[in-house]
Length: 171
Image 1 (cartoon, rainbow, N blue to C red):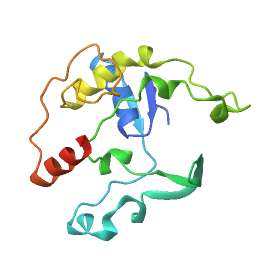
Image 2 (spheres, rainbow, N blue to C red):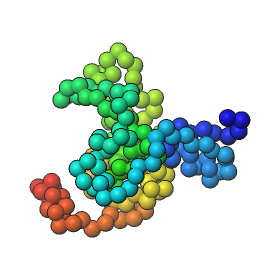
Image 3 (cartoon, one colour):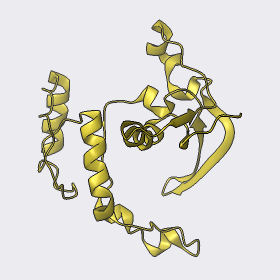
C-alpha cells in the first residue's frame, strides 16, 4: 500500500471506533482496518441461530482463556465490521474502582495489573457515554463509581416485565 495515513486503527468495534472518533474530528487522516466482513441482516438474526456464538463472525482463531470460580473458560474474538458492537445489547457499564485493583490471588506472579486506576479513565467514560448517548440515572446503584457529570438523558421507561424484575431485585 503506497498511501500514508496519519493513524491506522486496527478493528472497527466500540473500542477502535471510539479511539478513531476524536482523531477524525480533529482532521487527522484515519485508516480503519477490519479483518471481517459485514454481518448480513435478516430475519435469521432474531432466531436461535442468530446468536453471536453461532455466527461465522465469532472466530475459531486465537482463544482467550480466563480462569473463574466456575473453572476455565475459553472465548474467541469477533471478526466483522463493527466487532461486538453489532451484537450490542444496549448496556454500557463502567468498571468499578475496585475492578482496577485486583487481588493478589488474581495477579499472582503475572504482573498483569492495570497501569492506571478508575480516576484516570473517568473522563474517557464520560466522553464515550456522551458519544453513545448513554441514558441513566446516577445514584441508583450503590456500587457505581463516582461520576464527574450526570447522564445526558434519563433512562427509558421499563417494560412491565422489567419493572417486576427491578422490584424483585430491590426487595
